[in-house]
Length: 166
Image (tube, rainbow, N blue to C red; front, top):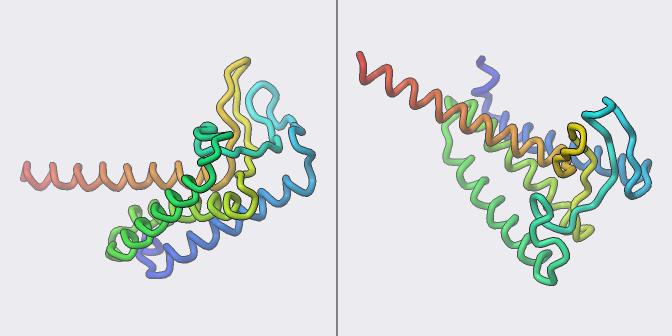
């Protein structure tokens, strides 16, 4: 998979993630009323328009210090991710892709937080009365990115284990 080693892959991944995230959030902000739900798969998946003033799972929601703390933490995390991404070599494709997805998701949510003081969420997954908190494409990119980073770590450990056996 040579495309994973392309030098511009992280840049395009970050930009694409931010653009898709922001476009999807703006779609829901303009075409849905706050709290409106649209069933996609009954009993499993809805689209809804909600706003989250806190971090993941509404942590710090409603706190007077929530917005400044989340902005500072987000900026620090973004700076660390950029530094880390720049330190990776092109042959670390899965890791670069994962870090770029996390970075794009963090930037997407930071934009919302900076502009509106809250994040727009619209994906609602549930089973009967069990609901996962609503989330957005930035959150999804972060989760997929972390998954790819873990996959890369697993592959690296597997490769080291094979070398020690040989």
